[in-house]
Length: 447
Image (tube, rainbow, N blue to C red):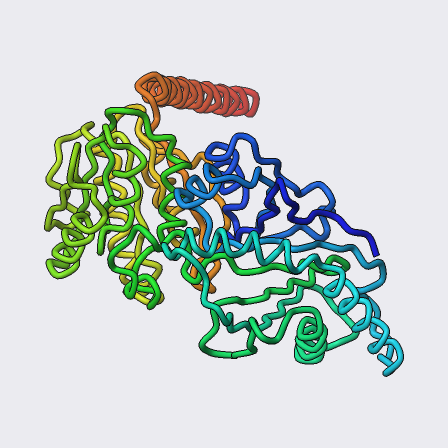
């Protein structure tokens, strides 16, 4: 067993969960907010890439705790008590599992759990837990539970290793200050077994970090609104510049406008939706999120197929389009997407960018192709949204120079086609003349 990274007296080793597909964007935000942190991803191979999670070590001080509160892209945050590599813990074979092999592997994991410095880990956890929950101190008796997640194939079941870990931890921590409870607990001991690596962690916050700044949490938890972490990552992909006009075509309860307004206070942020009730809830969301100061978002009741904006007036469009799953159907999307793209091509400036989140990747490609004289698909990223495989599409407006090239190219093709048609007609005429002369020669020779 090899120890990798762990929390110490001077440093915090942290694991953050992120939306799968946005790992790189989350790492960039962490590096920006915490310049002194170091990312710890080097010990994973490409075949066993850590998805939906990032690892980083940062100095253990008050400034770090305050900056962690400002992160948008992280969902959950864990204090890593210890991480250990156990060769042979995972398997790729289908050999029969014997009780001896299973017991040996369970013992290896429990040995890793017992090697944790629990006093040091609880001290680090208390600091973050009190900060995130805005309390002075933790309860005298802390109720705790163990959660185990696995990635890869192992000789044991999740239930078996969970029971073994609970028994091992119960022997290591004092019973007079800690009490096991599966429901009403303050401390979650999270054990993540990633192939041959075991992470022993403590959950630092009860709620997702990204939900702390949004009022309409219930809509998000029910899956009817965009998660703030996804909204942040989409805004980051747009590379919004100061003073630009940003539009959300399907703003709903206003998650995207809230996030964008907090990230870019000097921009004009607009939202459009057909549902008046959703717009009213978005206004409450703006007030609760304290974004009504410098340039508050403005929302309009309108159809995105007929936008009330002048041509070339919007710099960035960021929207969570209807998937055709929870809202609408694929047949409806086939009708509304083309009208949407026509308006996008009209209102977008020459340097405009579009960020669309949807599962309708083929329909997006077809709509871009239909508007290829104005738009081009620069990139797309696969992400997991509510258990669905979706794509974030980055679409750009073709510049005036590109449009001019396209126009000149079209005229050139037209001229070449005309010349070819003319040459073809001349060849046909010459061929007819030759056939006519040949017929006359045959007649003369017969006479």
